[in-house]
Image (cartoon, rainbow, N blue to C red; front, side, top):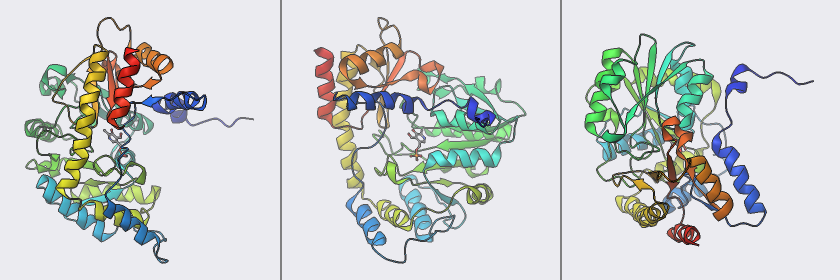
Amino acid sequence: MVISLAKRATQAQEYYFSVKLAEVRKLLAAGHDVINMGIGNPDQAPSEATIEALKNTASLTDTHGYQSYKGIPALRQGISKWYERVYGVQLDPEHEILPLIGSKEGITHISLTFLDEGDEVLVPELGYPAYRAVSEMVGATVIEYPLQENNQWQPDWEAMKGIVSAKTKILWLNYPHMPTGAPATRELFENAVRFAKEHGILLCHDNPYSLILNQKPPISLLSIEGAKEVAIELNSMSKSHNMAGWRIGWLSGAKEYVDAVLTIKSNVDSGMFLGIQQAAVAALQNSEEWHAAQNAVYHSRLDAAKTFLTTLNCTFDLAQEGMFLWAKLPDEVASAEQLVDDLLYQKHIFIAPGFIFGPKGQRYIRVSLCMPAERIWQAIERLKS
Ligand SMILES: Cc1ncc(COP(=O)(O)O)c(C=O)c1O
């Protein structure tokens, strides 16, 4: 006997990476040295103070119990001070911040909190796959909005007027943008807030990349005047603080929105281990020099990644931010899927095909900067051999 699945489980697709990484593991098990340039998994360590805080908390006897659903006060205060220092945004630590087990978790909580069946959600035609997947899981209708390649992959606000409807509830936004690396600009955020107000929709901004290879000071959507009325922002320590496996991020926004998400969240999961929260408090105090040192490492990798892409005859924009390079395939390459498989099986190099972020990505690839520069140079040698 086989018990039938819920409709959402039959409709949801297995994450592309989980399928492809199984193939990578098979090659590794067969003794091949695969250079994995596919996934955005920071390979550098968190700061020493971060690790010390975790160790110290873990070594005490009374620190292992359940934690509050809304995180320890010290963490919310730390996040509030960090928002002020990094973005010049003031957040009330008591009411406007909700610590989360990463921003991916936040996408689900937000969707459960704001979406009813039949509501429409605007997602970028190229973007993090979870916005679409979770919207569909909760029974909402996904409407893709176009991104203008010739305008740094920003939405066309005129065209957006033709897409928005009375049923539209959420607009997902993510700048610096993954996968294209398009930077955030104040003008973009001002337009987004104006649009959300005009149409009475919630703007959900996902902001995990603002400190990685940023070419200008980082921006929060919440720094735009009046944004808190219609916008909430996810942030994460996964990339900016090299803590992807620790699972910690947060949501910021007006009290009414944060409280509503907390009600859902408290029915789904529990507070993070105290050691992780204390470690995050320490990490949020990392110096500017610490962040600059991480970016110096990414810069050295960027040079190698550019050579890798030019060796493949790909073209790319130099204004990209974040921990990837997004590149267009040359005409002679039949398809991204073919190239990814050829590289994987003939050269033992894994890269991400652009279509996993949306159909618009058919003729693109994304390479990650999350490995030592020497590995990227090794990949270049393999391409040439
Ligand atoms: C755009 C974007 N949002 C969210 C996430 C999830 O991050 P977290 O580790 O905070 O769950 C990722 C991770 O790759 C991402 O690229």
